[in-house]
Amino acid sequence: MERLGLLLALALLTYVPGIRAADIKTSISPFCAVDISGEIDSSTPRGFERAIRSLRTNGCSGPVMVYLNSGGGDIQAALRTGQLARDNDVVNSVLEGSQCASACVLLLVGGATRIVLGRIGLHRPFSVDRSVSIAESQRRYDQLNSQIQAYLRAMNVPAALLTAMNTVSPGSIRWISYDEVERLYISGIDPAVEDHLDSERAKSLGISKQELYGRRQRADVACPFPSSILPKEPVLNAMRCREEIIKGER
Image 1: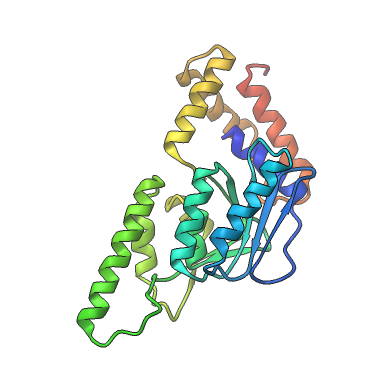
Image 2: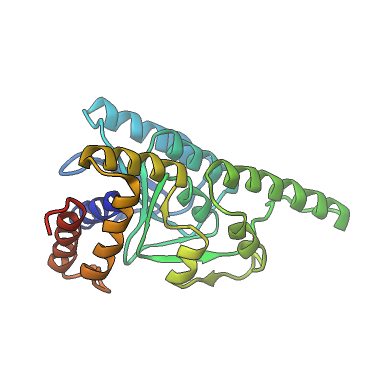
């Protein structure tokens, strides 16, 4: 969880909202970042790939923060961009004042680490092609669900997310609470990635993973995060408090 806290602070200090719709922008100072705003379409995967390549060429060797603010768009493009996000080990985020709905949610969970402070909206994925029969609609529904289920399995995200999406008609949208965001594992860290990071962290501190988890539990009680990310100083104070406990300094 220390990684989430550090990345959250960096996100708060560096985020600048996108201006135009369907736009992909990059920044390298003070933190390497990609801003994806507007509708996700067939050009998004290629644009995202170019953005990551540009950042790497300009010396960004560490984690890249991706800021999402989108009402959705093309499902196939979202899945491809989400896979690129995982392949490039980026941190996907939806900050206060931003939203991620429909297909954007599938892109979001492509990040091994996800930070969600903005609004998340769900509805059933659907094919844009018109069908000529119920049987054809059923076939497309099954195919699309199978594809998304495979994607979620690859991302270590529970199938409950797709179930929740399927309960809402494509003509509607349901904005979910933060508790549900956490329950559906839309925010957080991939379990395999988190286990590896925890192993490395425990090793660097010279303690067992069990002791690391015990210190984190004490930090949760002693250093709770404020309910709002603004002003920023209380967030940074909570992070410093947590780090001191995890390091065994208090």
